[in-house]
Image 1 (tube, rainbow, N blue to C red):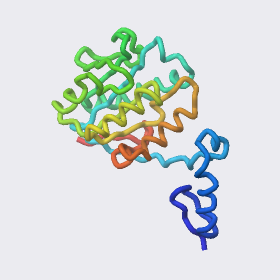
Image 2 (tube, rainbow, N blue to C red):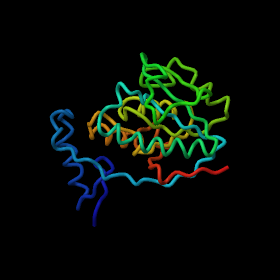
Image 3 (cartoon, rainbow, N blue to C red):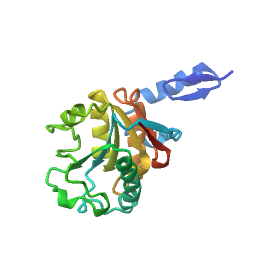
Image 4 (tube, one colour):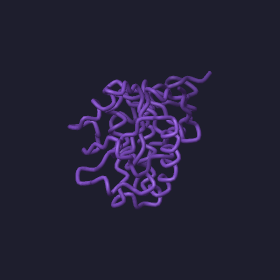
Length: 213
């Protein structure tokens, strides 16, 4: 018989092996055990049907001055496709800037319309901005979080959105880092497993997103 260990997330031939393993690891710091930690299995991407009347697309910090890494450049095309899909369905689009950015810095393919709200903050775009007010005035229940960086604005704004009571959709092909793949992997894991986000968040990709009216 196999026994599932919730601590390790794997199966053992006997429960004793699980507890023995845990005892061996309990005395070490994560730094001591760093090279013994294996990444979890890749999460399944979900198909998403979002209500166009209560969903907003967030495009975070896609500024020319920082959107230079190959992975970030590659994500621009995907975000642009999602932006077009959002525009065609009347979705609210909200942009963010870094603390010293300006609207002219936003990459050309993602240029905002004059009517699109823009907020400016640190990695949490709800912090000291009117983002929550913007969303609530439009009766938004769900946010699609995209942009740069995965381990910065995407992660922290997604978590903050969940704290504020929103459902969160993160298309993994619309987030990127400065060529640090582990940061993207960790962000995906955190969004699905953090106590704050795991009951409100879903991972997907642009081709799996559709809108209903």
